Length: 270
Image 1 (cartoon, rainbow, N blue to C red):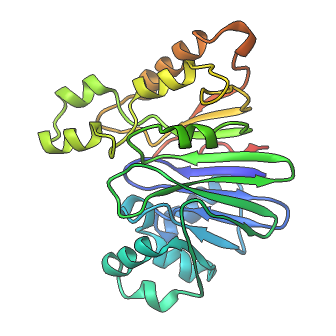
Image 2: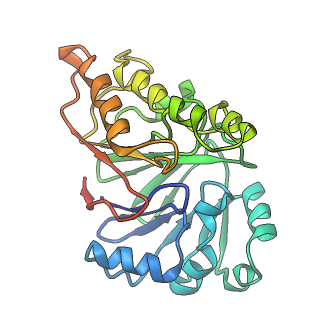
């Protein structure tokens, strides 16, 4: 599997997953021009998409969906409550460009081409938010962003992954003293908001054999960093310090990376 994180952050999210025969888009938060520019930056000329999966209806994850549907005419995979929300918030071109909708639900596994997808529930202030794991050819990867709490369910799905894309949205102190209104700060800090660097660091340092971070991933990608309430070097330092706290026998030997809002991450070969 080849993983290309084209954008990750509060202004737009989109990831391309590829095998030799299948291509999937996870979320569609960028417009056509920018998406094609990001693909060109990673030297990828995508002619066909086999499915577009939407995690939830917030605009940074779906704003470019009508254009993606027009460009690739791919089937849409989405939960029914999220689909209802998309129909309310997206322009009329969304409905006109639909070429098939596959209704999915949290807890479901399904297959697209040679990729097995599992959808699972997360806690976020959206109507029916889900995240995904993907399996193919003996590899597994997870994309887990836009959640306020790392439940045991989420931690279970993060185990045995070759690649983990995990939100590390904000530094709590930067958020508290930052410019956001107090009600927005409370939302972000809540269990239905976003994961902080501290929460992620506590998870990464936990080597519990049932729900801790198993450190098996070849790639650990910190994603959906806030541009106002975090800094890449702060998120990276927090994660590195946490990984150093792990016992030697459970050390993380993979590569720690940062996804960006402004440019695509180098493609990851699994």
